[in-house]
Length: 473
Image (cartoon, rainbow, N blue to C red; front, side, top):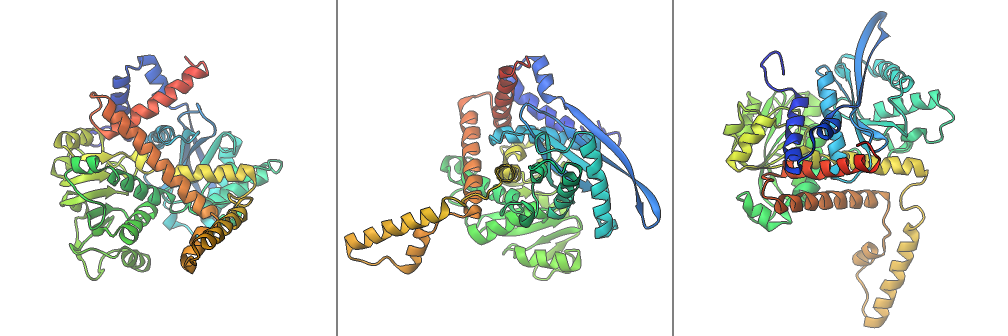
């Protein structure tokens, strides 16, 4: 329990949600404890000379499960990082990978630091020092534990980590696979940066492909012109909102940030808001929108879809009863607490759970990891063959019909898929199949009353079966 307000901790919220699924499955208590337990947690404290003064930094790396290897999970840099948060996120990664059929265990890392307080060179020094601690203690390796970007980190930090590992293990030809989310020219894969946000979009689209589900939440028709409120315009929220606006023609009526919220019933231009934030480091003063000082109050504003894409525990027992939306799409990890989840379910508000919705990042990380181990980009061998075959088929069609295929259509049909196309296709397929499995599980058992429980039932079934097969119990 949190000592300040006695509310359940992040890890407690995750475990309580998982227990609902285990109750449906009648999982034996010892097995349930084994599945929920964090296998190992490393805490490191290391000194770094910053501007002539020694500073000591604290970091963690948790491995929740190794029923599949490597264990996979992001690396978070933030002042509020704690051991409980890292353990909770590692557990979520285990269930997330199982839900979307990515053969990884769950892990997570965090460093207690505010990146804004340090220069680029200082951040490199700190990151490389942290990486050495993880490598030497067995918590960083292409075969056992693979980090990825998270809050406060990105391609830059992943490149530093990979290079540090390479220097410590120069004999490992698979060194590039020790992290994912790297720059493309350092072994990364196109589409990884926006993968989590794009996965959110694919999840919403799959929901709207099922008219029965859409009708069940009190909506109708497709995504077009639906009113959406999004909390957090970081990497995930920005890409999700931008894609929804540009490709699905939704109306983003409010954007919530840490310093307030912007509201415009006619819709906000996501790209313009993002550029304003980049330039001014705030949303205050943004034109063509009403500024709301108490930004989180906009979570309670009426809308069709609410997308919390910021931090955990944003919708709690304190505000859940005032939430007025038809559908909550959890782009962040753990934005709804267990108690709030119970209230929202009672109100009849449908939630697409985080363990499914934001799995796009780990899915494309899986593609990048496979690419690094294979040492060849996707599509390199077959792309031109596909193009040639398409041209032959189109030529045959023109000969048979006596009509010429329009140039624009010809180019599209004759084009072979490149790596970017294949990454998007693989991500879309993953999100579609995972939703269908989750939906079928929900429909098949009257004891399952919400999609989150259905998602965890899917995950726990797969994990427990894996433990059984290898003789853990």
